[in-house]
Length: 508
Image: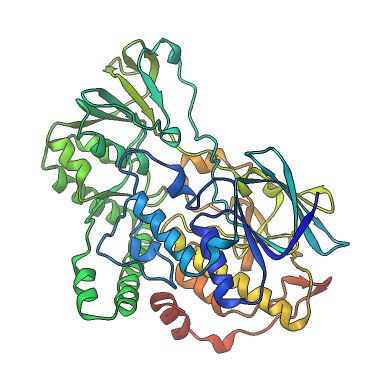
C-alpha cells in the first residue's frame, strides 16, 4: 500500500474544511495539502440534510467566510444556496482539486520517530485502504455523527402504521400531501420543518417536551440590499457583518447579564407575533435565554402557520405510539400519518476516527482544549470548531487563521513538532461547550474535551476576545512546547484594544 505525504491533511470538506483549505492557500501558499472527505460531494451539513425548508439558522453575512463576501439580500439562506456558496468558494481558490472523495478516515497515529501523522483511510466504494502521512493534521468534521441522529426509543413504535422519519435520513420524494404530520422536537430543525410542511400537509403539529426561545428574523435584509447598490460589494459585506456581529453579541451578553429583562423582551416579541392565537405557555421556556440556543423563525413563518390554523404546538411527553398516532402522558391523543423525530444530533468528535499518539489512544474526554483549536498533549493537530451562540464560521475563520500563523511560525524557526502542555492542571468538569445546556451537549459529556479554569484552556464564546487571542496574541505564550522545549512567554501589550476590535468587526 503506497503512502502519500502532505504538509497538511484536512479531514472533512464541509464549511470548516473548505475554509481551512482556503486560508492555507491564502496564508501558506507553499504548503502541500489534501482534504479527505467521506461523502461523494463537498458541503458537509449542507450536503447531508435534505429535509424540506433546510436553511441556515444564522445570518449569512456572518455565516459567510470573512475572505469571500456573501452576496444577495438573503439573511437566512436555503441549504442548496449555502452548499453552492461553499462549492464556488472552493473553486475560486482551487481547493476543489485537492479533495479526495469517498474516503473514510479510519485511524490516525502520530509517530514521534517520523514526526508525522500516519493516516489510514478507506475508500468506501471499493473497500480498499489507502495510507497518507502529514506533518500537520486538521480535523474539520463538525461535532455530530453523520450516520445517524439522536432518537430516543419510544414505546409502541412497531404498532404505528404510518412512517417514522428522522430528518437526518430524509427519504427522497416523501409524499406528505394531505397527511397528518407530527414533528417531535422544538429545536431549529423542528422550527424549520413545521411551517414548511404546512404547504401540502393536512395539518402539522409540533410536539415538544419544553418550549424554546424564538425570535423572528426577516429573510431579506433591505438595508444590506440598499448598501450593495451604492457601495462596493466587499465594503457592503464588511459593514453588514460588523452590524450583525454587534447585534448578536449584544443579545447574547445582555441575555447573560440581564436574563429576566431579556426573557420579557423575547416573550413580548412572540406574543405580538401570535396575536392571541396561541397559548403562551408553549413559548415560555423554564430556563434563561441562551442557556440553550435561540431559534430564529424566518419571516415569522411558524407564527403565521399557527395563526392560520395550519400548524399547532403541543407541550407534553409521549406515553407511547399507537397504530394511528401518539398517546401522550396527559391523556391527550395525537393522530398522525407521519411522525418526524427532530430529536437532535448524536455528537461525535473527529468523525469517529481512532486517534493515537505513538500507538497510545487519545482519550479526548480526558484532554483539555487549547484556545479551542489544539488538544493538550497531541502534537501537530488542530481542530476547527465553530461557535454555538453565534455563526459557526466566525470562529472557524479565525481558528483557521491561527493554525496558519502557527504553521508559518514553526517554519520560520525551524520547528517540527508543537504540543500544548497544561502543566498547571487547569482542567475542569466543563466541556468545551460548557456554556450551553442543550440535551445533545449533556448526552455527549463523555465524548467532549474539557475546558480549563483559566488562560488559553478556558473556552470562549466571545468573538471579540477570540479575535485578539487567535489573530494577534503571540504564538509563543509559555504554554506551547516546540521540539520538546517550552515556548517563551511573550508580552502582548503592544496589541492594544482598537486593532482587534476593528479587525473583528471589519475583517483582517
